[in-house]
Image 1 (cartoon, rainbow, N blue to C red):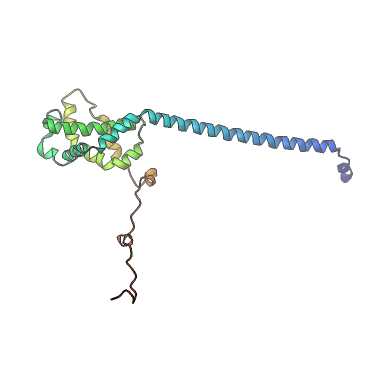
Image 2 (spheres, helix red, strand yellow; image 1 turned 135 degrees about the vertical axis):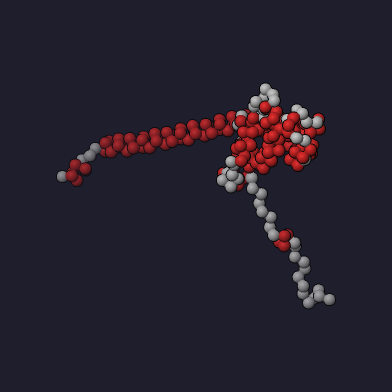
Length: 209
């Protein structure tokens, strides 16, 4: 009986079912393509926004890079970290230092304060900044902290260099080993020195005197 009923199934009904199945497949594919297109458009829009944002802040970034590359900046930083405490007491703060020492402290401190501000504004990535400058930030703050704290206590600038202090605290808790972006900044290890020396001509009976 079942075979007879199947045999009597109208051909138009079979075509209708096949047509509906094909239509469903086409609809599913269309929805999938739409989702992919929406995702791609969103990704492109986000990427363009990020690029545009970085481009608008290029002057600030160029200024930071230029200052960091200057020999004078590194001379000031070396002086602060090595000689400032032995030459001048923090009892007069920063403003009470001689001009040359005061200039060195202000130039270095405000550089890192600017870096901290750019991190706060999310123009610079904090993880990347700390991965590259962690030791410098900690060393500089430890050297100038007594002078900064005295300056705060004797003036109305209670938040003087506050962003730098916040960045310093983050730097003390930062672990380079657990930083996910570390791989992109690691310098590949050089091969052993012996492998850099090209081998000389092989000694054979013909070239041995």
